[in-house]
Length: 189
Image (tube, rainbow, N blue to C red):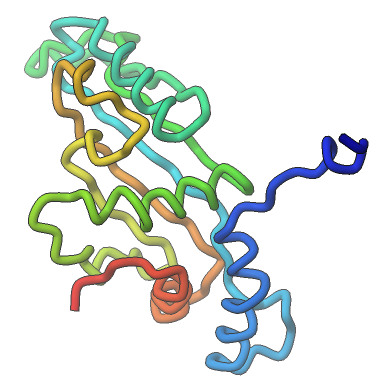
């Protein structure tokens, strides 16, 4: 093999789609004067809150391992900031994990989420289009991690949900919704 083939990195499919077609479509629809003002996806944050971790700390390690498989990056373990006796929560005990994806991994995760994971959700009718925060960011939750093909269903002890937050550079929710629709995001009709 030549040296140029070894050093070539594979460009994610959604990044290529964004640069070649989506940018031009958004620029035409919203009449942007500058190509740099076209909204793009900034980052994707995936959170897993594990309430049962107060009784068994090993649950957090298993959830972090599964989240690492899904995201393709090692998650950060989140710990309790203060003790709350009603929830049997002590200070500094692990209660969740989170991952922030940017650039190449972000586009690859978005591709897997839209193309593979959401069609595997039981009785799926689309995601709500009311989950925008007013500043161009979109939040939604998934009830189980089994919809991702990276997770081995035989090794899953407990079903764990997650919250996914997609942060964009869009100024309004309409621009952000159009951006996500262009990627093929499955919004409910």
